Figure 1: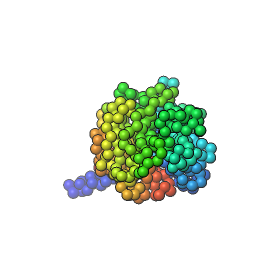
Figure 2: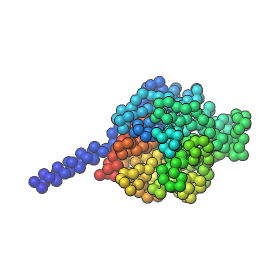
Figure 3: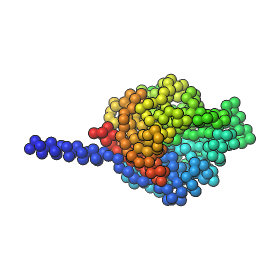
Figure 4: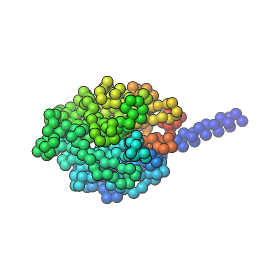
Length: 387
């Protein structure tokens, strides 16, 4: 009887683990619904529990520039199924990209929350922008009905960037010369506790002056608003040259950590910057040798698996040579160190974004199989911890 009981317990344990294992659905498939290619995923949970998945819909090719729009799909059942494709933002025949959605849940005018979608527009390729031939602009739109309809876009370029291009716009005559520009990409965040509670914080990056060898003209920064989008302020830029696509998360004490790609590839790891005043200054920048990276985007998010417990989760391609092996890691010390993680997919995988579902499960929206589709995988915290 003891042997039978032991076997039964083992089987039950295995079944529980299997039930928590990642379950995937395809959200955006290349060549379908009017677009040649989908890239750059971002995802956010609405206050009613809906999951809102964003991506760049590239009309004719998979190129980063050209006719690129931001589209949205919705799940009302924790990622089991996804609704019809909706247009969220466009720029005519030119580029609208780098979606960075975030919910503002502290504005008394909108007790059900207001969704902000920050994004960038451009008319030329990134290399041409770096050469000073055009600029990237920064915008936001809002929605009060969970992304069904959107406000008129608001241009915030002069508040959150420092372009120097008077031929394009006389307002762009800053003493600095910011050229390429990109929000995170991935979700932005709203601070939940502490003296900066309610601040909307958007990680970003820009290139400064003419192109430098090994992409050393790139540097990460952030921008934020404390008045629900009426005005914005810039954080200082990081000191680490070639810091690029960045994303941030709140730590257990209400501080922030910003996690960045190193564009040069001179270090095949992630870079992290820490702040104790919500981005007004940076306290520390360090290369994270427990976060290998192939020069790709990654995602980070705060998670509370239990009451009075706080962890950070991080997703990226766990390789120093290829965009493959999408892996989720855990930090229990506010991003100072990271676990070995668990692999969601061993094959080709690139950009990703993390979300916490209404039922407490973890979700990741990621590019799969050489950018041919964007899929959504969801799993339990017990699976992530390997139990």
